[in-house]
Length: 118
Image (cartoon, rainbow, N blue to C red; front, side):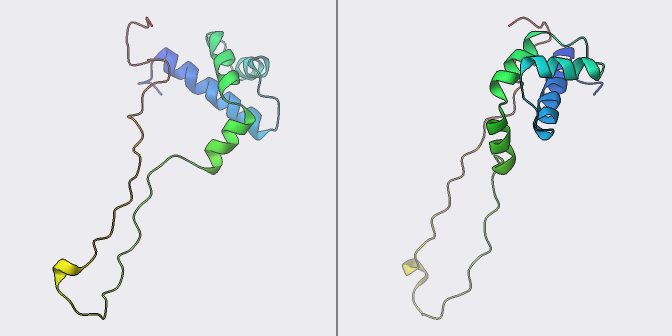
């Protein structure tokens, strides 16, 4: 946590507050997020974070992220050898599954900038 910037810490605290509200089956609103942040000692979080996260992290979206995480799956095991003879050139080549790769993980609010200016 020491290596995170202040804005990254604020985003982290806000997202965890939203997830805690979801887990407690409470309303995920900016007011509730702010109340939870203050109750946990995170009083320095910028006021716009709870608003943005409440608009984005609805209960439905959190459920969707939990149920179907975005990650590439490993390929299945190879099939057994066939009994039919024939030239290697005649074998049908299996098509590889095209797996969409997620773009590189980037801070949602441009936290890579040290100057903090958007």
